[in-house]
Image (tube, rainbow, N blue to C red):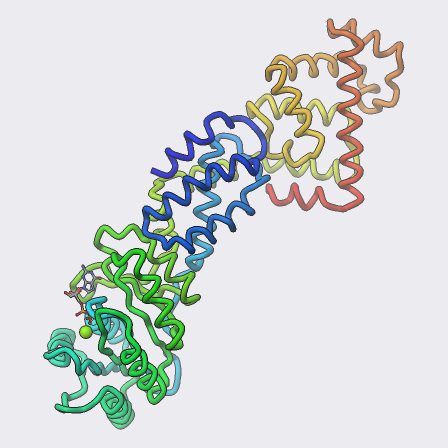
Length: 439
Ligand code: GDP
Ligand code: MG
């Protein structure tokens, strides 16, 4: 799965603070392949990857998840964002009758979906009429009439020889006269998009002024679905998309493509041939399906929540006042040790990244323990007021910690750099906000 693959990419990154551009780009190559395997159209995949790369670079890796897992979460959230965060609904609260028109290629599932939606709306208490405008395929109108009988939904009586526009006009008149709430127009399709079909769709839309024009797309169509969508979208004012055959082995990629190309929400997913097998479209579920990634997202969410909120707040309050003494540095070092790497909080503090790099170079825990030993050898006064540390005091501290004056100087320099960074941040008023994001 994608999460395994990203795990491999990030193996060597474990324990480091921020996601670097180079690492993110490497990961995004895997993401791109995963998207294409899920049938996302190439240009859509490309655009998506660019967007996510920008977002991911520089993000801090949470403790207790791997960078790979974190990238999966970022990708997942971007997918949900792009698919539409919420389930989209039909907008049919108008002076009746509301008109819903379904368009799409032949065999995409328009007629079936018309009956499914009619059944759904009927359950919601709407008085629904269906009308077939498909005069191309023999028995297409009869097919809808049969479905009408099955679902106990009214269908417009068939009049031989009428053209789609005439049928639409008759459906509207009849619905008005008989007090229907909703008229569903099931249109004809073609095997391929052609101009005659588009003209027909435009003419029907012109006279019936639908509240909803839904493009019905077979989710198994894969890459070709994009051409269909962009053609329809360019010529008919679509209000939404319905993906059928989501019960098949569709990997969900068509959803991302449809949304990107039409700019309209996916409203429903067809889940089988039976007339109750239709569901509102759930962006989150489909995002998970595209990535094929199981539990990673919830794992990362838990890790983010586990960051000690109190710690963050306490620290934020001190830092907001520009305070950062040796005690604060010691607390930060302890946190770094606990997390086995730069922690989310520590990572937010500019100088801390540098400290972590130094620590990584020499070899983790040992350095952290040494720094801790130096701070421990200071008096409480010195810790609270590092300015006191003159040559004499430094010699005492070096002896006390079993280290050299040079080591003590290094720590003092690091502290100074961090304090300066902190003051700069205070001036910008930024740190509290940054830390607040963690809470
Ligand atoms: P139309 O030409 O666009 O009107 O397509 P139809 O509604 O006639 O559907 C074509 C075929 O697809 C029929 O056999 C349907 O039963 C089947 N079908 C439609 N929607 C779904 C779906 O969501 N899942 C599955 N498995 N089959 C579907
Ligand atoms: Mg049909």
